[in-house]
Image (cartoon, rainbow, N blue to C red):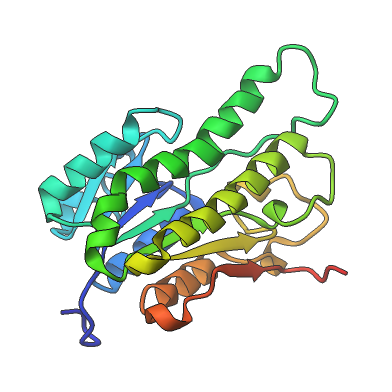
Length: 240
């Protein structure tokens, strides 16, 4: 049991080595959940707050969202460790400035966007699906982006991948509704992470902070099936 009397969840979190994913992992670990973190370099977490040697309820597994076989291997390792999975948080993503009139030779970058931003979450949820349905109150939280809701600039490749991810989230929700799976697409605008390091038009203190998204994600895991929001738009600026 967690300190507040609730049962802990067993959560897969991709992209947990930095940014939003790391903030979520640190928050959920402190709250007593069992976590399996999929990261490209597990050794990078040694000596940090997410060092698995310090926490028996923490499992770390090598995972690359662009690897077609990575999701199945990670899910199998998590089940071998904890015996179950009831929540998936897909935070791994890739940013790109490839525009509509992309240059010759940029096609591989566009393909990588689709592999990481769309097929990565798709494969991960597919691999975990039987375990999510068995739980009866499975949770899927996907970090989409406001770029999955509208296009304000010229980031054609990134925006297209995020629109596709939003559509995928809707289909996940449709597919899992009767089995008690609830899906939330989290759509932030600028977040104070490495991805926004080059943004000069908005002070970092006025951006959404990773810890705030972690707090929202934590609450999503505690809500009953009857009131889990599908879409959570988090915007640090006013848009018409």
